[in-house]
Image 1 (cartoon, one colour):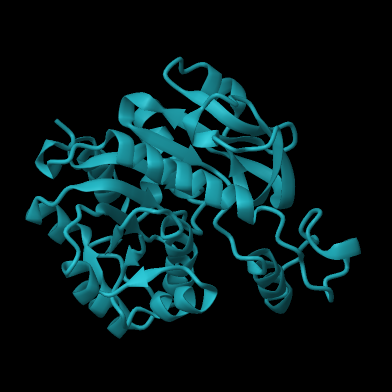
Image 2 (image 1 turned 180 degrees about the vertical axis):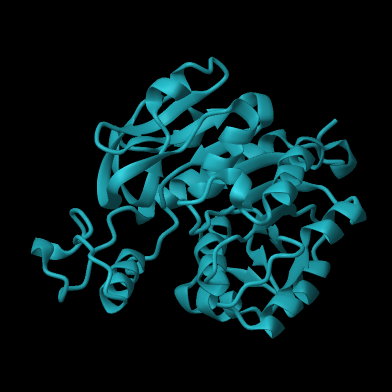
Length: 307
């Protein structure tokens, strides 16, 4: 089954060209089926790029997905046209007041790692989001800064500044092969990393409720399960496009920011050569497994979510 998104959303054409099955709202209305309702709380400045990345992964399962785009209520983006935001996004305050529930919610990262959590302008509202997930979302997936913020809110696990940016493609170990979220995973896999902060494994281990599923000896824990809060936290970027790290590197060079080549990314460390995507299959496995777990465990009656 395809993912249901508005036919005029840029992701509709992008995914159609890639062969991902997409469905307009009119087509979906003709099917007698209960789709999975997935929300994307998009905190990234490049909204459209992020929409494409997550819609691609979420839409590659056999299930019909109804994707809703959500933004923080008062925070305004300068990198995406106001018309796009007004056409496709609903503020969280409106979502909360409507009483709508979701089978799944993705909370993205945000380029604000240098700030303490309570210095983020929308931190109070984001904490409301975290609490709201416990009664209105069946399963939540926090990504990069979004995952660090969520694990901090629920468990007090801190983020720590790195002396240099963790940047590139790093090998990660499959620590719990029996996990349904890692079904089909190799014993190790390549994961793109791009962050100035880290969560430390010893601090995660101090919280018995948390289980690290993927981890790296070089860049620490990557994927953590939090069953008590029906959540996963991933601190790295399996959703990245093939050229996303290149875009970040080129941006830093253009801005005059000293930047190391992303680790093990360009062939022969030559930035003039096109990077090869070595994580795509595991990205599809992870998000497909997440959607599958939601499908198997979410209530058919959405009113029962969170009860």
